Image (tube, rainbow, N blue to C red; front, side, top):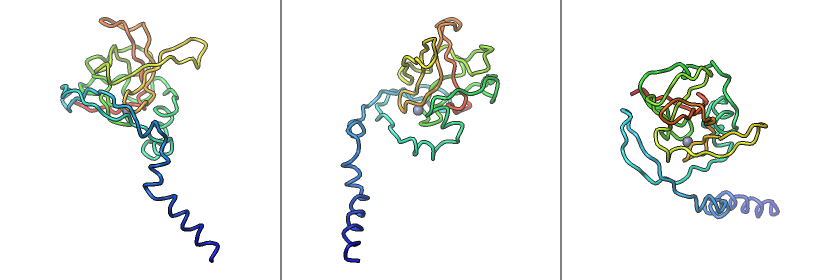
Length: 180
Ligand SMILES: [Zn+2]
């Protein structure tokens, strides 16, 4: 028992919030702030706000999402086309990030791409999404992510309709639709 006590004391120390905070990765302590454009339920812009980048462990994301949402938004998998309901949904409203609720796309910029995935010609605000080069296939693609939490949303292709000529090909599993 005399041997166990120091171990238990040490274990208790390791679990204190102060110790856990001290062990946090430097990038978590100095997380960049990002400007996000907010929208209300009616889809009207309510201003720009600076928010701390959301940085959660995969275990935390797994506990907050369904398995399909987790694989899609946090592991980069792609929904099977022509499944779900959003690809043929044209009700007015906002499509938000399933992970952090950031407004991503408005129904006004949605179009029928005949690909079986929800498709948009522009994000609701350029600040709310970011892109990066995806080299996982022989043909290089441009991945689209939520700017605030880095959720994988899909890809953007230069074969969309006017006025942008872009096609944001987005996974339903990474979205939550808020009807207007
Ligand atoms: Zn997000």
